[in-house]
Amino acid sequence: MGGTGNGRTDLDFVNSNYITLWGGAFGGSAWSISMFNRGIDGYYWSQSEDDDANIAFFLSFDRSGNIWGENHRMNKSYGATLRCVR
Image 1 (cartoon, rainbow, N blue to C red):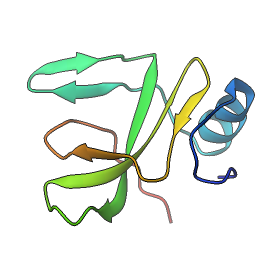
Image 2 (image 1 turned 180 degrees about the horizontal axis):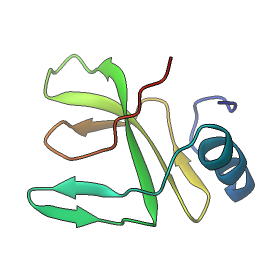
Image 3 (image 1 turned 90 degrees about the horizontal axis):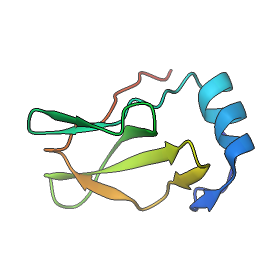
């Protein structure tokens, strides 16, 4: 998917790599019964869990070009998109 895994801001990179090539979307996230930031942010769970079984790694990007990658963790009780990648 390109990049180093570190956070950065690059809207062209988000659009060309995460949206066009990878097929990602700005699906937002969920908590309880509410959806947040649909059309603004994309949150995707990683396959990897943290040492705490309630926490997992995730990738996030937004329409401003911000990317949060390596070492970002979120509680599994939040809703993020799942995408099967072979």
